[in-house]
Length: 200
Image (cartoon, rainbow, N blue to C red; front, side, top):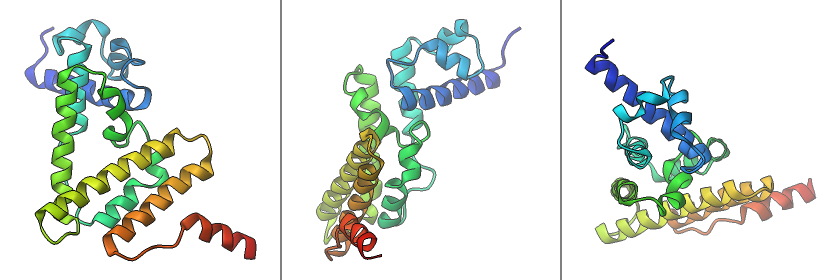
């Protein structure tokens, strides 16, 4: 039976969505083409009707997952609060592709790295519009520093096997970013929490 053009597009969309989830959850190497097709509800044999290779799938899945946000963030502090949250930390498969896959993308062919680079630059451009600063250069510097801090903190929080330390990484990074935004030093979140526990 011939598949309609619309169905082909729907199938490809399902494959890319499944690949995006699985790659974030397990990494590129641990996920096979068969895993992706099964998750998408399609047969393994149909894969090459949609993609040239697994590398092609990786590049296109990154492009899809890293695509322009429907609504760019309007408030930097609120965005950082949502990003640096336990809910995001615990949702690797549905979370930020940069935090989940940047280190693996380093070892991928040029197509995947190109997609990651485009997405990074686009996101920094979005953040520059809402970042603090006296001029465009200051705003861009703040955007790069903020985004690098957020992604780095998420990676550290996820890699830790100590829940309390993982929470500290998220909380202290939020507090530090808030201080950078306002210019007002914030108290140490962990020390404040532990002090309250001792006096309570």
